[in-house]
Image 1 (tube, one colour):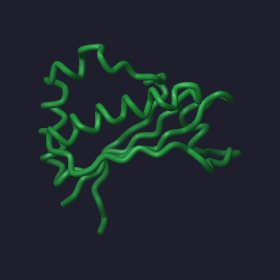
Image 2: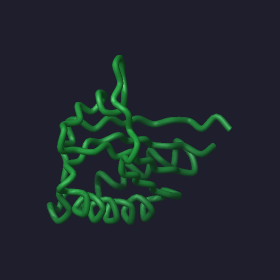
Image 3: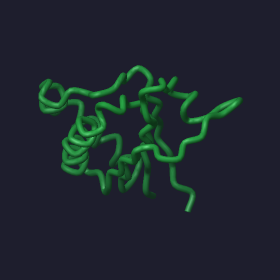
Image 4: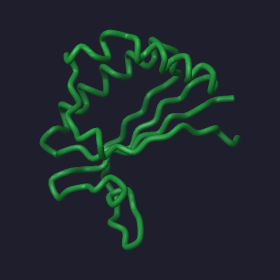
Length: 115
């Protein structure tokens, strides 16, 4: 059954193009290691919440936007194997594609598809 990794990340507006370039590089690696697809979306209509929201979850600052991303895998097993290969891939740790955002405020998780 298809498996999905989801990510919500605050990215400085000034780093939009740097993020897009970073994401393209990562997407190629994810697909190389078994991902079916990678989608990155720049927040365009992300309302502020009063109890909870995307913006609150990532502690978005006034000069940032929320990015919503997901990676689909053929199965949980393929995802686990893919992440193991990704973490062992020296290109992930080379410093050639630095994160243009504060990774400490990124939220993420793995999800089974229901249908």
